Amino acid sequence: MDLQELEALRRNHPGWRLLAADHAPLIISFLYRSFILPNIRTIKEEELTSKLDDYLFHLREINGDIIYPRSASEYLNDWTTANRGWLRKYYPIDSDEVHFDLTPATEKTIEWLASLQHRPFVGTESRLRMVFDLLRQLIEGTKTDPKERLADLKRRQEQLVTEIQRVHDGHIDMMDEIQVKDSFLQMANTARGLLSDFREVEQNFRDLDRSLREHIATWEGNKGDLLDQIFGEHDAISDSDQGRSFRAFWDFLMSPARQEELSKLLEQAFALKPVRSLTPDPRLLRVHFDWLEAGEVTQRTVAKLSSELRRFLDDKVWLENRRIMQIIRDIEHHALALRNCPPSGNFIELDAQTPAVKLAMEQPLFSIPFKPHITEQIILKGEGVIDDRLFDHTYVNHTELQKRIRRVLQTRNQISLAQLTELYPLEHGLSELVTYLGLASNDSSAIIDDKVKETIVWHDNDEHDSGDGLQLKRQATLPLVIFSR
Image (cartoon, rainbow, N blue to C red; front, side, top):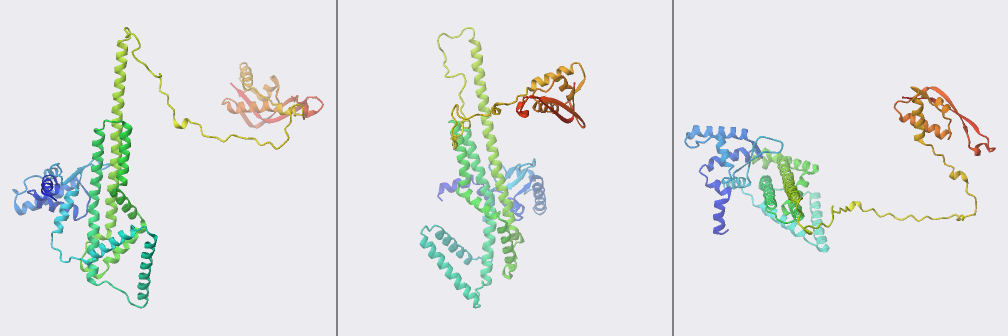
């Protein structure tokens, strides 16, 4: 940290400005008791104004009205201005009421001031063990030689076997009271620090979104390149060190088994006598639920930023389309103006009247050609006899049958199918009769009465059925079918 950097921090950093503010004790004490102490992420404007009103009333009763002359709402609005930056004023999703939240710089400053207070007990052993554990995880997690990894695992196995044998022999190593207090305070500080880091993670995502918008607004190149870069930046958000660490933390915390294990460990730790002597904050018992709440807020912020960025891109595309339509209209106006006196010669050339669009999905998929495998003897022309019945198909003309029905209904209101077949005998037998039934079922004005039966008779000309060339008399009994106008 050189001189120029410190001078820039003093001018621009909200935390330094907070320490140098005239009413710094008022601001810090109020924000600490409103946000940090009860561990609240956001507060509604009306609620926070009421709290500050009460706090100012209490201070004015002690010190007089001259010290803090402004109203609570004026103070809050002043603390959210750009040259202050101690509070963030915003509208949450699905809410039209203003909310306030601490900025990460303000929270860091308050935490730093809190660390300046005298601590009756400063643990060092737990932090030293934590340093060793982290270094051990770092070294073991980066070894690529399988032999070294196996050697480490065998060494840990031998240590576990030795420890198990000591427990069987009745030798149980216990932490003394000082070690318990040291470990618990270290855990509490880490848990609170983790909670406060969420505001900074959220702020980093907002800063990244702001830089993307600036990049889009000043972009002058191809739109496709811009979209590639935008999606590349989105990948960079999730694939960055911070994004991956946050995602791993969230996946770890969202495990119900982990949450249950953490709850049990906290309850067991709070039940220890050395821990109870420290009178710990009972809210630590549910610190993992506070992590969930803070992490969910961060997740919602990332989702909101993504949707807003997409809407921003859509608006920009709409404006570009509007500009293109305006250019087309200008060309049309010029063309109309020159319609009666076009310029001589070829003044414009077009490759085609319409663009040729070839979509990838229009390409036919590959299909394996069918190769018939003939196992029987091939019958050549003149060999064998092909049964004529293979070619003896019956075709019933639906249109002709409908014409018959309409023609008959011109002179009467209704007619049954039996009467119709008497006027127009069946030429194709059962196939024609089935076709009549199909027409009746599709005609809304036709009636099919299942309770009344009628018999239809026809003569079949199929000589193959009789074998002697005589016509066969056939009949069919079916429900009464009446065609109506």
